[in-house]
Length: 470
Image: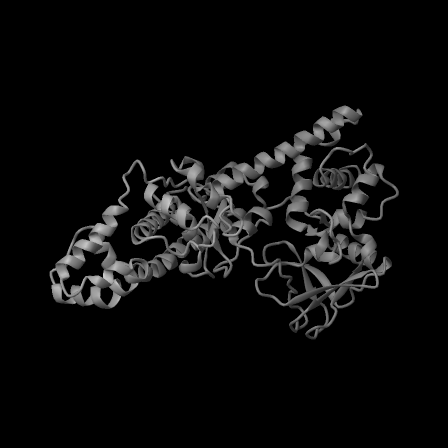
């Protein structure tokens, strides 16, 4: 069946099931993928299309219609098995209503699982490199669960090869929605569903769109006007390029919701036992293993700064914080100037290490496939991200410039300006933490010795530092 015939057959099938599709048509986008386009002019907040809920494929339907007993399998594995059954055993199936939908699904995907070896090598040095390995391993584990179940039931394993399962997984990874999105009253466990036609609307950040459940129909209503021939967009949420590339197989240049994923080795901190009261505490969010440096949050409020403050605490700071804040009412916005300087320096090293990895040389193929183009966008935007973060980070360092000079024992040649900076910037801040500084009047040398003494009190050796970057 030709592609155009598949599309028309799919739309006709939707009409016969009661869907409203007169305002739209399905065409290929510039990348050769299906997209939904305006067939007529669409006004803002006008219901553009609707699909009956009976066409949604969920875990209950998948389990009920599978040709073998799926009890004991996770929902998602059973659902993948059913979509594979519909796709590759369609000649044996006579009573399913979803065949027109199955026929229009892509034969191949641009998600990580379908990357060639050469394309995977382009991920070298990026935060997504290890994530891709872990994702493929996760999918293989799911496949092994299915194979083991097939052996138990006596159903032929030949019907479910690895390639077929990977195809089914990619369908769900790139096209499914959470059940709660369709039914706000649903309070069960997280569950994925497939919604024909809805899954063909491509993503555009910040697009205004409303999904509404009305009279057993799912309505798609954009908040903007579309002229004839324009592509209609959905909004998958504030997703980064890492999420888009891993889950959907594409990237967006200058993505406003991009972030850098950072992993820290908590368990290698020599003082991890003493610090677990913070690492495991949900109040501060420090129990999260994945940290993100985003474009949208200022450094002063970033969770990663709180994590790093705890990780670089030495014995003295850990003891004092335990003693003073056993009820965990401290917001970890500041611990000490020694701690703050070490935290900032550590963060600077972390950015530097990540930047060096992203700049690693990779061999770019002469023929740039769709996947190659997307990975290059991901790498380029990651580099731009470092440039942006370094600019903001440098402005942050200015705030601690005087303290850094004190901590390193260096006094600038222009003593007059330095003393003025001490008087107007450093001492008033220090006085909040150490009231005794107010008793040191007039004598610049005594003040300098006192401040340096404060830092010496909290001196941390290389062995004690307790911060290891992944």
